[in-house]
Amino acid sequence: AYPPTRKHTQAVLANTAPLSGSMASYAVQVVAVTTYDLSSAGSRVVADVSDGGAVACSFEQGLPLGVISSYIGCHIQLGATETTSASGLRMTVTYNAGAVNFTREVLFSVYAFTAISLQVSDTILN
Image (tube, rainbow, N blue to C red):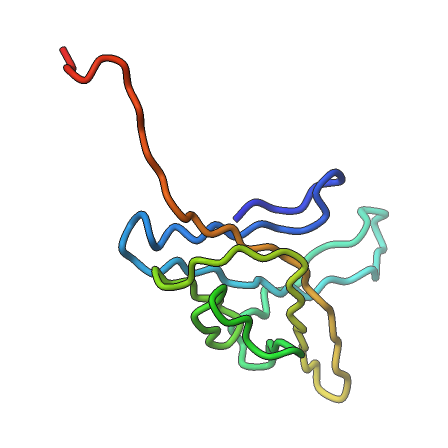
């Protein structure tokens, strides 16, 4: 995946499945951070809570057909039959921290390769 930048504010997931023949899979990483700072070091990661069972992901508008094969937990699966690119996809990530739920919307795009061709002037490799 290509992470977001100032110029491009959404991550881009490349669907490499049509090229490789294998499912492309991307995991959403969720971390707990603290701002309780006695040493003036700033915010810091306390724990990776991605696979702890307290994280749930969903698509409000349902699964974008033709773009994403499935999502299991917070792992997005892209298959060879998904041939549509899309931008502005919104996935809701909820982390249950005991009595409090934290929710964040993750924006991303999917780029699906439709056709790749190579043209060379010299077809004999020496």
